[in-house]
Length: 161
Image 1 (cartoon, rainbow, N blue to C red):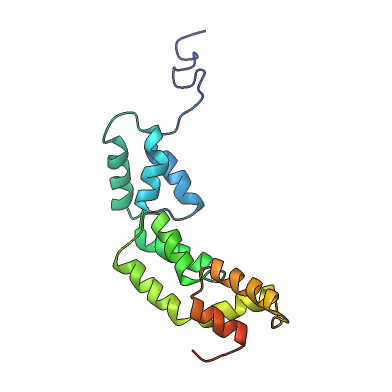
Image 2 (image 1 turned 30 degrees about the vertical axis):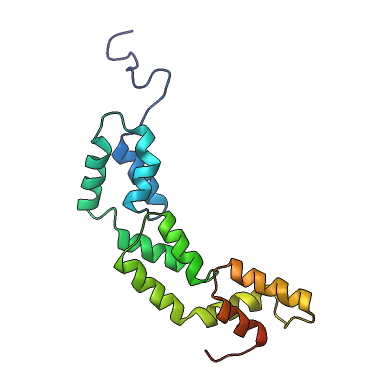
């Protein structure tokens, strides 16, 4: 076997190992990620200190990483099923905070009642018949992150907020 035909060290045993930037791009191709989320996921693959930060800086400079888009993505994917409290919790878990998150939460609170009514209608469709069923319906909506006052109004059938 000539030198050119021999597998390189990177291809032996371990198989091909993509660069940090390549790994980040693969993650970003699946869905939007925040910078903090990418740092957490890729930290174990960093071989030299500062390598990950440099790769993420390059991706952020090219607008592949955009926290605003990550916020929009979470809100658009989850707002139809979850209340503002749960959406905020998911954003915080992704390392997102600040003014953009506050604005998104304000917009979600404006539609909280109608979203809660839709979630309730899909799941239950009819008012509770007894106290046990009422408690079950309320627990369901509260664990979805809807505000207690909104849940009370949905269960009572009160349309105005």
